[in-house]
Length: 311
Image (cartoon, rainbow, N blue to C red; front, side, top):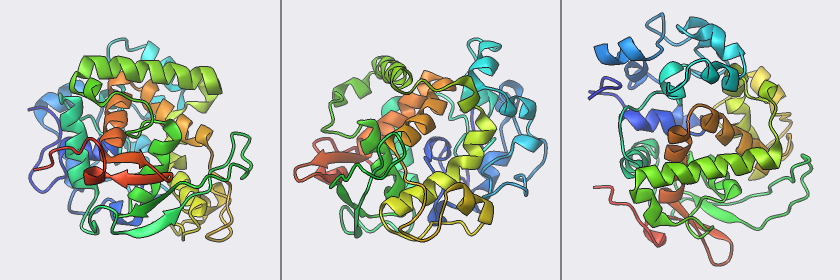
């Protein structure tokens, strides 16, 4: 099995699928070896870190390892240009371990990847389906104005639910938002569906190449988490770094740069640019874990029409 050396590590896809960093997801000694200890076949094929540590200058632990990566120079170029120079290469392999959420998972089906991530990411703070704190979101329109007063609400059953619920809803990939769950059991078909969604995102938002620079996406990742917290009126998670708070325009738990559908779409489109298999795994994770229910409530796992087997 290629990929990350296991043992005390998180399962191999769990790191790759993390949408953002929260306090409970801060990389620590328990799974940093996942990023740093790669097996022989992995190091032969994929990018890797040049040091046995994450870059200490990053604005959040293990959020940007480009300065100490074998392909670090390419982190500062548009992803589409880089990948065009390496046809057939998986972007998560090429940029493997540039961040705690960007780790090549090896060969997995969509269902395996989704289940693997759900079981691991939710962490020790998981309280059970819809037993967490109720949260209500305010999502900005695509001009960045906080004028789309949605009435979507959910329960923060684990810390990362705060981000992933709104992220999945904004993309329209939750159960009940139009995707065919059965398609997920055919990885080829699901990847093709992801490719269609990526094309739709680009037609809608017309991201320039300059907006798709990996290092910028990595540096901005924690700011997205802060802005998502503001959308729910909650304190900024996992960051006291002033540069992150400044990037998020954070002034208080209810005052920062509004987060919009375009912001989430750009985050996902970075994964599209790194390979449709990677965006498809992200979509499978978001779809498997949550659904849109009556009353504009986001439900989780056992509350949904499809509940993955996590045994």
